[in-house]
Image (cartoon, rainbow, N blue to C red; front, side, top):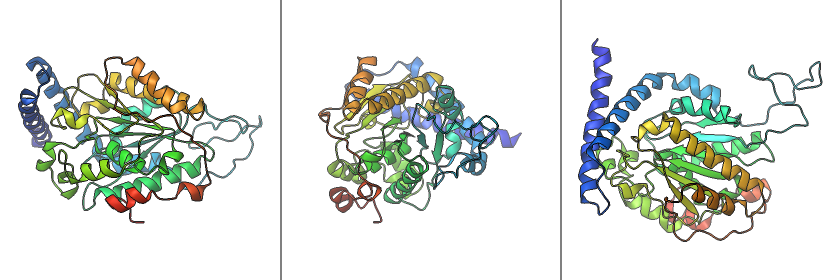
Length: 356
């Protein structure tokens, strides 16, 4: 019985402390304070979300082996009786002359979590037609933001190599979204992908980071050095980028920390749920999947598709603010792999986010 009480006590403590600080910060802001009933609902969502995260967490190593990007394309499969490729991993492969309509998706989890964070999203994405869904995992301990951006760079390039001629979509929750933004800070990297969606990402950091365990967590303080360096050197987004946030997110305090100011990003409001419950909420997932579809459609529409996708996303949520100074639609010509790997001198020199 004590084994069951311990996770419950941890979940209750996390929810109580985070929402007390959330409510305190909300009362100081000029924006209207959320009603107490909504905050109490957020507490319930937080407890349930933390319990689910702890329950699935031990399955991380097995889950990661099944959904990580392959570093090289799969070898050609022998033709079957009807001239189609043989099944791979128990699923029928498409015919050689057919290609999936929607691009691959790479999911990046948040701080202290692992790839099991995407247990339901993988299913929902596949049901929506995104049949090639991969997860990138990393450790939250004995590392720093720059090293994690480098690891993400390797994962994205492995995925691009596994699907030549296609540009994947990226989606990250919490710190995972900030890692994606850090990777996109290099304008050359933006040529490799079709767009990105973030969920509950502390784009300006969080004051709760001071309570975190480990140097990585503490580096995510609100308007801290990491955020200032990132904003000082990152390139405007020339691919579609959408940031979804919950109005009662309990891990990003103050709420301003959820607002991205990078030119080219679109900010959209998600359902009022807790930070971690965004990973288990079907309505949030629908918004995220709709955003991925718009980005995929816009990218397929031509070089200026990313701007059109951003406008369509904004039209779908007219009350949501848009990041100021959205980038003009520019060229998106593809170069070779060597050109894509070229570094952004400003980003690399100013931030040290790369070992290169």
